[in-house]
Image: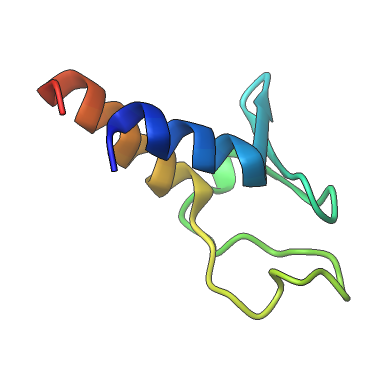
Length: 69
């Protein structure tokens, strides 16, 4: 996938504002200062069983843009 496609996919699952990432499904939040921890979804969220690192995912996408991929 291209960097643009990856960003659209990330954006379909996450929202970011003021240094905080939100899950678009359960609206759980994680500030950037807590990025080393796994994202904690709200109980009952369909993504709760998956290990989620939205900050790392976004970093990887930004690197693809920097690398021109």
